[in-house]
Length: 144
Image 1 (tube, rainbow, N blue to C red):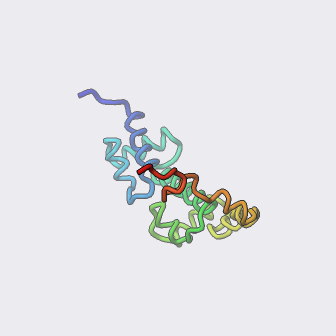
Image 2 (image 1 turned 30 degrees about the vertical axis):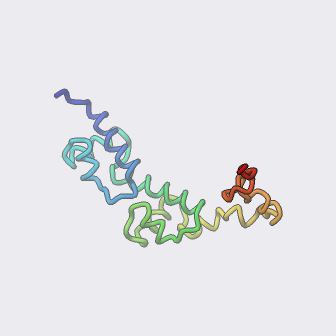
Image 3 (image 1 turned 135 degrees about the vertical axis):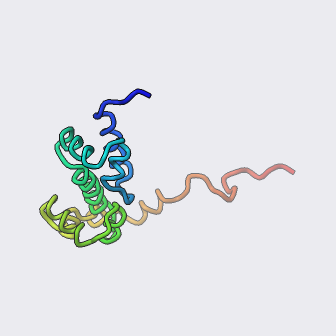
């Protein structure tokens, strides 16, 4: 069995954090994906990417949370849990440290476009109608 260079192993761990940030994964899981001990993995990851594995995973989670705050109306608690964090207090503190404001203040800074764009009801009704009927209304009756 040929051994891959550390950088390849570290990329596997980074990919794990990117794809499964919402799950209950931690540095041990990332180290296992890289095939290294936790201490050695942490040193190598920091050297290769300029931040700790824990910091990288938290950054991915906060970036996703910021996107959800901008684009959904989910509660802050729900978003916290959806991105894989378990403490709303820690989430709020980490978010404020990263973005300079609380999650609620961040959301207020990016109001929903629905609050600004008004579409007349007649346009909504015209475009919301199905293109094809499901009740065979648009087909000619079969000859008997």
